Every structure is written in C-alpha cells, then in structure tokens.
Amino acid sequence: MNPSLKFRHELKYHMNHHQYHIIRQQLINVLQRDKHAEVSGEYHIRSLYFDDIDNKALHEKLGGVRDREKYRIRIYNFSDRVIHLEKKIKFNDYIAKVKEPLTREMVDSILAGHYEVLNIPERPLLFEVYREIKNRLLRPKVIVDYVREAYVSRAGNVRITFDKHLKTGLNAIHIFNPDLNTIDAYDNNAIVFEVKYDEFLPEYIRTAIQTEGLIRQSNSKYVICRKYLKFNTWEDQ
Image (tube, rainbow, N blue to C red; front, side, top):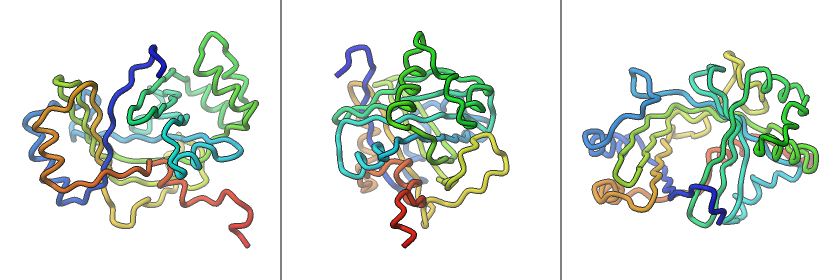
C-alpha cells in the first residue's frame, strides 16, 4: 500500500426507495449535510470515465481483480467552474483518490484528441494519464450522470451518499453538452448507497445499515453504465 495515499473503507449497496426513506430518516438528524449541496440538499455529478484499448478497468472489475484503478474527469451541476481529473485506486477493501484540477480549455483539447495538454511532468497525475494515453491507448469511454445527496460525520470521518437517477450518456463523451441524451442505467430506478470512513464506523450508522437488510454490491457505476456499450465487433454479428 502506498504510504503517501490516504486509503479509506468503502461500503456500497443498492437500495430501493422504501429503504432509502427509512435509512435517510434514521441518519438525517445525526449527520451534517455535505457543504457542496444546494438548497435542495443535492447536487449533480457528471463523470467521463476512461479505459484503455483492452478495456482493462472494465474487465478487471468484472473479473473480480481486487487491486485496480480507473481514471475519470468529473464536473458538478453541469458547470465548468470546478473540473477534476481523478484516479480512483482500489486496494483490497480500501479506496483512495488522487485528483488534479483541469481547465475547460484542457478538457476541450482532450475531447478533441489533443492530448499534449496533459504532457506536464511536474503534474504527476496528468503526466501519468498522458503516458497511459500514449502507451495503452487510454481513451474517454462513457459519461455517468447522477444526483447525489450527501451527509458527513466527524466521528470516524464518515461520508454517506445516496446517488439517485443514475444515467448513462452511451457513446457521447462531450461532458459539457447541456443537451446530452442519457438513458436510465437501472430499470427499477434503484439508489446507490455508499458509506466511506477512516478507522471506524459509528455504531448508529452500522445499525441503520444492518436493520434494513441491505446487501453489499460490487458493480461500480462505471460498469453498470458500460453494459449499454458495445466494445467488440462480434457483438454486431
């Protein structure tokens, strides 16, 4: 494990709307709202995920590889005010995230296939992605959209998120397109419930999760949305 990275626990579940309302009610009075939320208590997240010529990130996830990583560009509320290039790292049952800011101009260049904007050795994450683009033909693959309702607790440095209305942008990669056509990624409009924490999870949160019979799930939002894309020519035959 890289000692310079801050690894955290991550528990991930699918839930229906009945479970959502019960657990939300149990937690809402003991947690603080996320500072990034709007008046509604929610905010919109759009991510553009990358994968290489072999779809390594997809196949490692589907194959159950425990240690893996993936890259994405992320924006909030359809705005270009805050843009991050992120690398999410999975190590056993822990996760870590490395991120670097991007400008709108840099993203526009990347989407146009002009990857030299990432050739900046003094910015390690950008340069890493640049090398992946050159050596492994890393490319933008799919847009993932959802609405997040988030809460935090200082005890255990806990972050709880309810991710709703998960949608995929199919083959589109233009992340700033306000008219992007998306389709629902879940037939039943399920909610992705995630619990992230450092050393310990407060008992009242653990109890709330257990009493509603939630079952941990493994498929990432990226994998769920990639299932709508064909990436082998034989799929057309």
